[in-house]
Structure formats: structure tokens, C-alpha cells
Length: 266
Image (tube, rainbow, N blue to C red; front, side, top):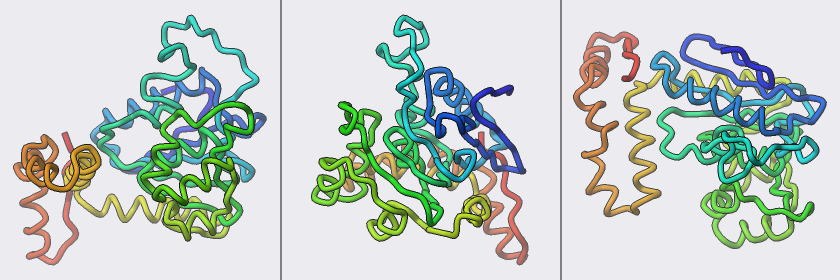
């Protein structure tokens, strides 16, 4: 698909999406949010794409969050509750609940406000050493209403979350790693190679198994431990995994001492 505010590259089963608004430090206005929503819609719908990587162009900013300088027509019929975002939220990700496929955030520079929320909405965050993170909306009279407040509490627990949220503080990549929000910190020049390495580890697994795993994770978040265990065998993704070709291919490949040939998920 043709894009104006991001670059989309496909390499095998991996789609890399690069926010491309360097003049605005990769902040997103309404049009960019809707475009990213369509990009991630297409990612979810394409069975040949198994993993996505989200990053920002340049080395200064993953995303500075919402572009507060570009006016938005609140009467735009595409707007969600009068806001310049699709129903899937900022960057087409933060309210994309029930997403079936993994997304990796490769954070270069700072991820602030909605930019941090977009990274938190991803499954794995890989950060450059020079990256920093913060939900800085209270410093401009706003609040992190794109799921950031809830996700920070979920990721960090209440006390660390309160310390971060109530100060609107920025923290460096090393601290984000120490607190468990970031999976790996690498030299700035190695960021995209590291993100691709994580993607390759995921696509070495059965995509149907990854979808089933994500569905069970979501059911745990939604229902808790006991109810999730009781309900998981009824999940469509789990049923598809158990009845699909990969469940047979995995054992066969192991017995034959070869790499498995996974099927595109349906």
C-alpha cells in the first residue's frame, strides 16, 4: 500500500514500519494515525506476515507522541470519539486489543507520550542505548489516555508506576531495562539488527503456536489465572493450533532432524 507518513518494508515474514516525520520528531497527527491504522490492519490480515517491527526514522526520536501543532477536524467521520485516531488508537496500535501477531518496538531516541504508549502496546521493546521513555503529557496539561497509564501499572507494579506517572519523568533505556519494560538495550548502530534478530527468533516458531500463545496471554490478562486455564481450550487460536498442520509438522521435523516448514496461519 502507498504511504505518506511511514515507510513499509517487507522481508520474508517480517514487516518493518518506520514512522517518517523527522521534521516533527516523528510525532503523529490525525492523518499519520489513520495511515498507521491501515498499515497494521493489512499486517493482521495478511497470513504471510508473521511479525512486525515498529521504529522511527533517524536517531533522535522513535516518536515524540501526538503532534499538537497540526489542527485536526473533529468532525472528520473517521475520528474515534472526536479524537484524531482510528478505533485502534494512537499509531493504530494502542487500542488494538486482541491483536493476534507479535509487534516489536525498536526504540531509537526518545519515546514520549503517545510514542511511549505505542511502544508499550508492542510485545517486545528493543532500545538503543540513547533511547529514553516517558509519559510526559501532564507537563502540557494532558494525561496518557492511550493506555499508557494502565500498561505502566501492569508492567511495573503500582509504586514504580506512580513514581513515573505522577512526575511525568523521562527515564533512560538502561533504567527501562532494569525495571523490566525493555527486553534488550544495544548500541544505537545495532538497533535494527537486534530487532530483526528478535523477529527471526519468533518466526523460527510456528506462527499458529505464537497466535495461540498470545490468545492465552490475553485471556489471562482479561480473566485471571483460574478462569483463563478453564477457558483456553475453547479459544479459536488454540483450537486452530491443535487441529492445524504445524502440530504435526513440528514433531515430524524433530524426528527427521530438520528445520520445520511452518504453514501460514489462517
